[in-house]
Length: 322
Image 1: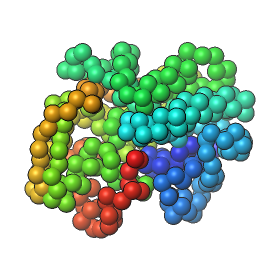
Image 2: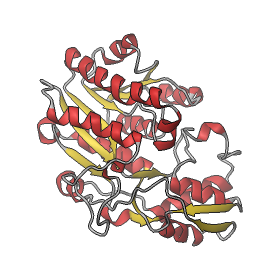
Image 3: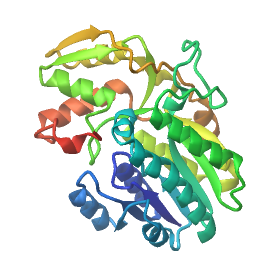
């Protein structure tokens, strides 16, 4: 089985590529290396992955990447609300237009299945976040990023894709140590700042979000691919665990059990109104998915990596998407 991972040199992409290589698949990666991951893809190549450096917006790059492929995991995107807000034209081109072009090209190339990386941010601000929302719940995106993901989901789930079986996976907010590290994600950022003894300003501390470790996110995709296309085609799976819904206040308290330095200030801001608690019972029930890591585990892992000097300058540009 040959699997193409677009964005396969990214935060989730490298753990996923490694997961798929371990499963015995032939892995091809298409990535533009916009975050300077040349050293990281050299490691992937050494493990046996075929790495193509290219932009998913380029028809020639898509054609080369899809040649001889059995299945596609589409991770390539401008990820996150701040990054999309900073480049609205680029985010539309990559997250919507190039994605739909990839779907069309995959159909034409005879690819059998596609897994589309989406987000639990699609749920936006729930009227009652005390009741976890399922995959059938109302989508209420409040950011450009989530709106773009919802638009692609609508196409995949309600269009005639021929023999291309499409599955959408809505990741919880991701955290944890990975080769292409990101410190612009809630758990990672909060842990870094308090570890360094800095002041941490927290807004929306009572709002709910679900969280999933980056390697557990990769494992969730592999579980989808390990099932036959007829079992998962046309389906949506939230990827995470129902016990891993936290408020930002809870995240701070979890970090405080390991890190006592730094200062926390709770501030009032209104530009991020997302508030959602998510159910992950479907992926557990239907695919047997159980994450290995919890947020407290991730905090311990992050602190150990910072203490060991794995990230000499964790505020460096390469560790964030904006």
